[in-house]
Length: 254
Image 1 (cartoon, rainbow, N blue to C red):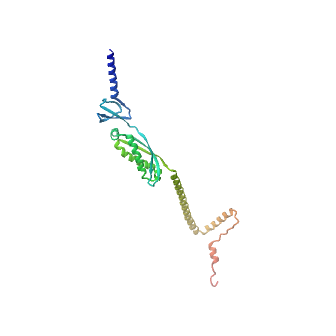
Image 2 (spheres, rainbow, N blue to C red):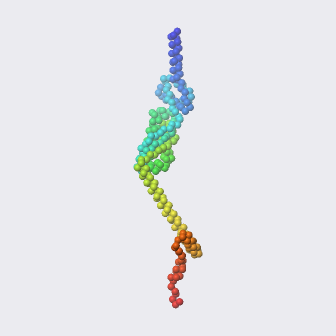
Image 3 (spheres, helix red, strand yellow):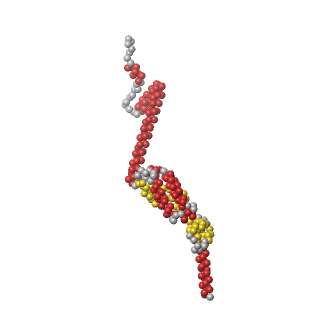
């Protein structure tokens, strides 16, 4: 009798073990790559999956977007500036078969490829471009990574450069450069202002030359300005035409 109970118990345990090895449930975002006797036989899921124990094996693959941080990389820019740059990449698996069969560890492979691509792309640009044109650099890195990981069934959707760290001596040099640039712009603006003022003065002189009475009005306006400053100096404007008449010699025989 006891032997019968033991036999029943062993049979129940065997059935439970068989079912646990044969039945798999995959979530909506999961896929299962099935191998039969070591050979690829298909991708299944989501939902209930029934396998042949021992004969078939299943490898789960997560199809959700993976966020991976790229460690800081030492980059020498095209203008020979040493910086540390780190970034973050977003990618997902679009082909579970290739992600399992074509590469041993797609997470590690993508991380290493992102690091080398980051150094390669940024090394072709100057420091000013790294600081001012991040959107374009992000797009270039994303496109290059996407092309290289396509054979692994991976789609790189976003690449974002987070930090560009510069050493202290280079920060001082950049500050001096920025100050010099601001001084240059100030001098250029001042020179442009002088040029515009000179052009306006020429136009004003031409207008006054056409109407001599206007020059007298300008004389009176200048006197009013001088008197308003409580100055002891009194200026009497003397027209150049009067000087010409005073300096003219009388005609012979007059």
